[in-house]
Length: 260
Image (cartoon, rainbow, N blue to C red; front, side, top):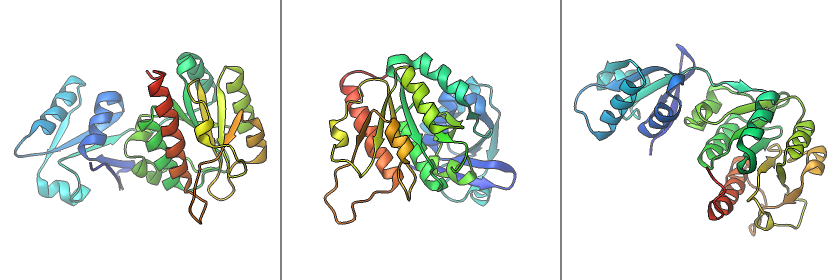
């Protein structure tokens, strides 16, 4: 399942290559596609699917030979490459409106102080796959959307809203007032994340790679749990931790039909 992002001099955020990422974007956010390249030659079910989606949404197809595709996108293009408009960054007002719209099924991820673009991209990819409604990051002391973020996100940056807020603590309080339960992850607790009840409207909060959650953020959480570990390192990459938390939440929500 190849899903890659290629940065190019003629595009601020680059090209997405691979059928799965391209199909997701063409199906769910066709209005974001600026260019679509398909390899000439023998067609198959997947290429016909791409052609049908492009025709449905009025997207012009540029045809290129295998050699042309490899020269521009490398050998892992799978015969398709798309370029999207730059991912949009949303603000507090959008977030509050979204929380009200999704109601009791709301599911959000907050990343407080993530500075590695690869980690943000990986978290966004997991968030999109888990059905998260939006990823929330602070405006300061955090990486934003960069070509590296979009590359690692493998299409998720075009599909899951990224919200930048000016004050993490105030945003948590606003979401709690709107009925969202806030779950933080920390090593400084004996309570397991598997004891948390994610079936209601939920916000999962993770701190920075080096320091974890700030005390002010932790104090705002309704529940704080740790990921059980038995190895000697007792530490996980933040994107791995995010995946574990999000998919435990998704497991509970699927079992209780709290998904759209």
